[in-house]
Image (cartoon, rainbow, N blue to C red; front, side):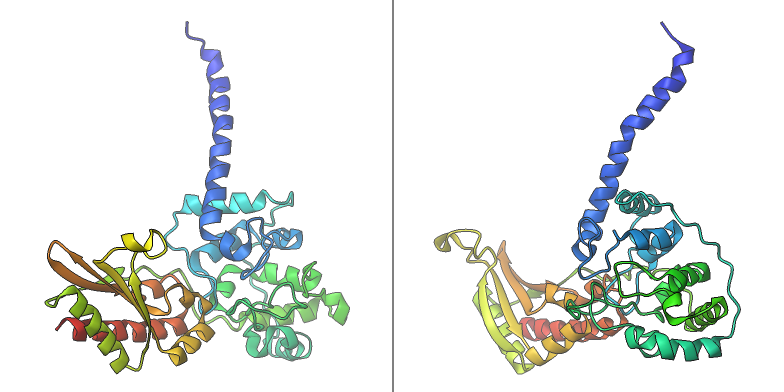
Length: 347
């Protein structure tokens, strides 16, 4: 028998039973994309601690949404342009689930004050932490280390991703109240009045130069593959000679399945050649420690169905994931190096 009056109740039941799935989706997306830097419960690490109550009280959903979408160009926070809007919303819901705080709703009203006066105040009270011209403190913004007495590294206030995400009203609130459990003090500790705070906000806003929307992925293949006319062993030796000729030091060559199977069962037709230019390695790590994901350099040689191929990752594809213009240059250089070695080894 059909009971029309039960339809709303049935709909509500279905909706409520779907909520755990939505929550699980947000948790999984956060785990996959955010936890490695910000901690599984937002306790921080390489990235800032998102679980701080004072942070959640000041960060609007729109700020979080734009931050995830555009990242922090030149810092360690990448752009997640590949995530759909509903996936970003699920991540934000998961972050909000950590603390029962009111969600701020800052409007986009600009504060028009004296930026020149704000600059003087910034140099007096803020530059010791946030750096000259708001470039940010040294530490997790770019590197994995930070001063031991700081729970977080002061952010780069001149970063275009930050300025495109934070409203003037949010900036004003942070300066006014500070942020508990971080080194960020309240304005009252420096006897700053509302006019002073407005001037500081205008100075920080003066750093904004461009509108950031997240860059699209360029059409770069994930792997560089070259077919070799030489035998499997000859191709490996050619790669070694080419790498040494470009001032790389050979580290080792090993079976692709080394460590996964007993030594006597290791593949004889899949070998990885490792090599490194330590000077370049240290320079690249200083730009962004995530290059450790694909350094030292390695080229894989395989023989299959009578055909020998040499291949490597494509650094140009990887660099797009890191949102760091400085790193792009290093990856372009590495791409050219791989190409040269692969070409010389397979000519």
